[in-house]
Image (cartoon, rainbow, N blue to C red; front, top):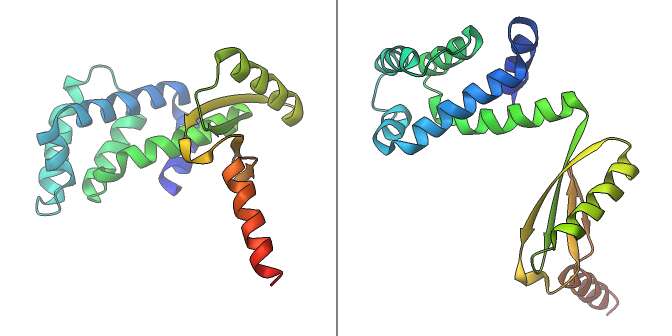
Length: 175
């Protein structure tokens, strides 16, 4: 997402990228914890000028926020794009991890993995990738067994359900 990439460039030059991430996270939490505020900021019937005025009033109440974060919030209000704040935050976090050389890995299994198994997988993936790995786990009972591992945009499907689907496709194509 171009907003996240641009924000990272600016925050590397003019601020602390980690601080900007924390500030954006705080703003996103504030907005999500107040449904009326979230609704107002996302409502296309409210003109951008009013949204900018609202953001301008909120910024001092949020404490010591960097100039970079302030400018982003005002820019998003002016362009009526405050509704994508969560998307920007997610993309910014991904960009920040990439900058630090950390790979984000999503592991989905049929049942919850024990913590020691997650640690073993993390060590193995870190060794294989030659860098740091941040592992997130998820459970999907439809997998039946095995696991699906996603590293970036690459997916490794080692699930029983995936294997059965591949067998079914192969069987149907052999007819």
